[in-house]
Image 1: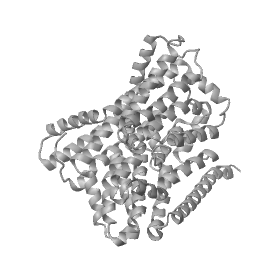
Image 2: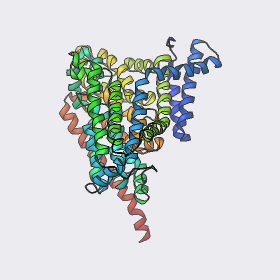
Image 3: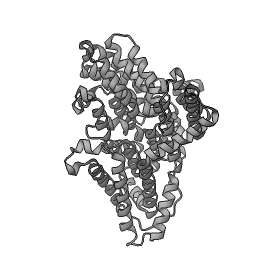
Image 4: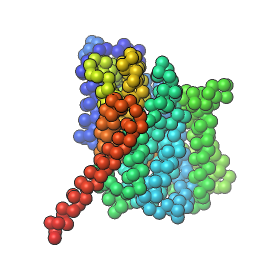
Length: 504
């Protein structure tokens, strides 16, 4: 779309608020997102001049534009959906489940293994969610780990890992936004100040090791232990072996990394770090296609399936991705309305620029603003793309230079927190897809965990603003997180002890 952005003021935050509120109340995300997009177009037409029919036309113009802009992502997802179905029907997933089940037999083991795999697959967040989910879902089901908990672990080891990994598509994107502050070197210096990412990983491993849960997740885990979710009904070959899962997935991972390097120009002299961030989705698409070819070469000659059955699996895999793709396309369109047409980001960033508080408070303020903006628009990348230049500008003077790196770290952390919690975030959607968990149920169960960490981070950024010391900040934040853990554990024990006392 080539329409000019309008200044909608406070009305620019209405579309995401409407979409998210309706989704949480109605538990139905498709119509909620569509109404959010439509309300945004109504705001645009009100400000720019236009009638109701024009607003409806703009809705579909935006949806069509976002499908075009994200064509590679759509192709990647349908190819990955096809690979998952084909690998399942080959019997490879079942064979892997039996093999891994002899080695991983407890919920703690399943959760720790998922967390460790999430740390290893750090190149791209969506790739992380889907590949780790594909590999670990059979094990999680066997060990009676709920789909909600699996989705939380996938989500919490996706963006939080990518945003602190110097070699990732995220690192390149951030470095390009802070060139004046030092580029990739500035990004590396923000890592100790990225409290949300670090503490989220601490929380994931704590919850995995202790097998402790609270809030809606506790209810989900108890339900999963009593009535575990089994594998989906599929026509599965009895000839499958572990290699039938391992070979296509390993081919996918290796070829995806090589594909990102190739598309980004690594073999033409571009640095590897910059190359993989140039067009990561195109590289992932090439890797997934290579995984499909590996499956074809592995299954058909051994008569695990015929070419016709293979292609039927491809089509059925595409069908399985339609719900996730529908949510993603609507979420992209809503984000486009907010960023490109009614200036939600500009309104929020102007608010940051006019807040006149001592610089020591800037990291905490920026964290809150970034979290709100990312939650509202469903994109961490869009949020730090808006706020990082503004934060750099605010800290340009001598007094602000001392809090530049903490404030940049707070911007990244707030962006990831908002993205982590938002029901319209693509990473949250892909985590639900990877775990095959109902999307809004995933959002509901992980929200208390993410918000607990975010509250600790806010206090940590107050410390960072006054000390400008990353190690003091991290130490205080970690101590606060474990104090919060202790408080929650005591609260849960009190709740469970009350019925016993009454019964006695």
